[in-house]
Amino acid sequence: MLEEIPDIVIGRLPIYLRALTNMAVNGEKLTTSSHELGERLGISSAQIRKDLSHFGEFGKQGTGYHINYLIEQLRQILHLDREWPVALIGAGHIGHALASYNGFQHRGFRIAWLFDNDPAKVGQMVGGLPIQPITEMVETLNREKTQMVVLAVPAAAAQEIADQLAQTYIRAILNYAPVHLNVPPHIHVRHNDPVIQMQRMTFYLDTSLAVGSR
Image (tube, one colour):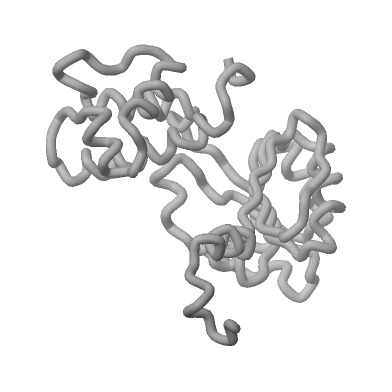
């Protein structure tokens, strides 16, 4: 089924889930509609209905979607009805921030291991986790059958580590390194480069207001 559903559709499901969860936490109402959800997210109601139709029928004509039920269904579709242990590779500034972030666990993830190749950092505690040497990475990930990692290392080291990860159970890499990774087809990579995102947004900026513009 996953091969038949466009990745862009999968990418919108967590956005729907976040909006619905906020509605449930705030206790606003028991039900919502694709129109209301679309207005909150800036997505057309038709697109929301089409996205959800890939996975079944979750609403009723005239009554809309039961918020808590749709949350439960989306969590199951995204396999968030369990907790996923995640390995964090790289204990630099980004790694420190991610290891200390307390927003993962309530959304289905737990940073369980932290690795770095700097001997001076090994043994230090970050976010309640000891920094382990990178030499223990493959053995640890295979022993624990870990499937997801966050890669927060310099670009020069990223591909070498990705090659090592291909020898493990890893199936998903969230890559903060500003470089494309070559990995086997069974490993899904998402790149999180803030510079790329800003470069994308500059398309919409008014160049006449920019400092140094001519």
